[in-house]
Length: 288
Image (cartoon, rainbow, N blue to C red; front, side, top):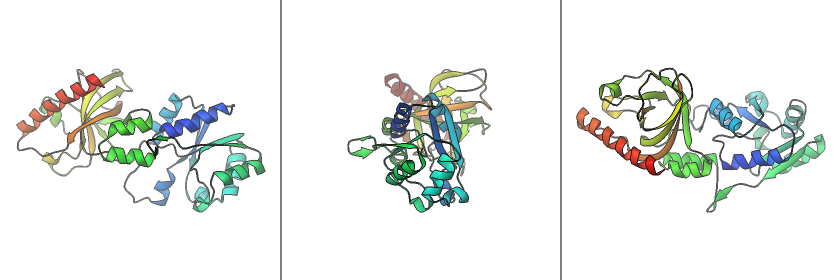
């Protein structure tokens, strides 16, 4: 049980401990993320949307996923009521596994000690998994966000246990990349934590459509400062690929940050820089 944003190595330790408890392996999580409910006007912070989280959990062998609708009713439940009415009465849990920093209930009044007491009262087992980390730092969604904000995707990968990926549908853009000789697949990044704006070496999985494949590429994450004020988006050039990806779903893994977004003196300087970025990305990915 938890939020599982990013499904990082700490989350995976909780999942593995739950697997050892026996019985069907299920995840209890919350949608939307409680932080979105309590601070709806805060900047986007999620590392993945619910669909990406479900896909990642399925790859880890999770058999059942319960996304509890988080709103005023759930937020107002005292810890005892949550354990009695949701965990036992609603889900019929036999055993609950959580991380050592887990809190729950109205005003975050319940912690792992509370959960253990309630498990004894209502007849379910509880396993508390120590926090996972390295170098004196616990792996957490907060630390991963900071690594991405700093342009350190490899550090984020070490905590996640996998590349940080941006997944979504390819949408129509202004097609400038095609005009420049560097066609791109454009993806919105609404409602997700925004990594450092700039150019990245990436790996790309085409998840749907006739051209399902895995390949490498170079991507620009930003607002395209040479062409006015724009909402941030992700523009991905797939190496050695020719095809129509509109409407298809991509999973783009950030491998290495190459440079900050910049405004150039002319379109030709921009095109030359894109070519240099692509060469650098190929060299990075060849050694990755």
